[in-house]
Image (cartoon, rainbow, N blue to C red; front, top):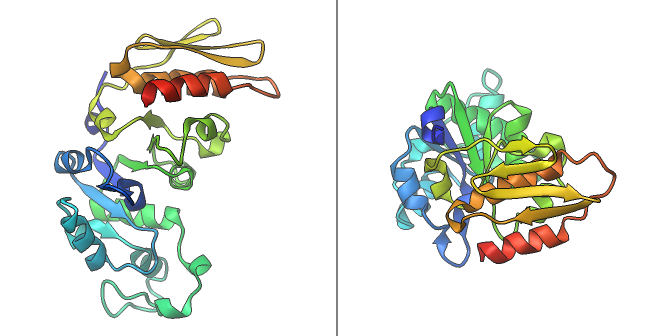
Length: 246
């Protein structure tokens, strides 16, 4: 099976999903960025300019330049092209200080501008928030959801179809690993030695190798998302996976 860089020709990173308040950037970010091209960083922070974001990334050891950064100002200017021309690349055409946060463009506009910047025909969106992957799905862009402490597995298993990511990863190294298909045998879902099933309304996980942790998340998603009952008990399976991932 191919890796994700083999399948896509543009990589759109949710900037906030790469940063961690305690360690600066999440693990393996620098190595990942260095091996992907073309790449764009999408910032949903309306107060930051592209130059400021590029400077922040450089200070954290991430090789990024200003042209790779897509901000709310860029997306807004693109939405209003032909109506009110911007005076410079980073200037919001209506004056950022006069707008409330709700008036800024959403993730779909940021994604479209990032696709234009990278000239990608087959882009891949990568982030840690459900809003980001849901926006990608809304405009038919494949996405990777990086599981983390705030966007934990429990929320993912219960999310609605229109908000689900295309791929699930436990860290950025999963982008360079094979993306095996989850096989279904009757009611059992299997991937790289991990098995998940639903028995009497309870999601159950049978662990595989620790080296293929993301496969565990994949089988849990497959089993949960194909459950046709009203209520699914996911607690014991999520607790088990969480303990194995720690």
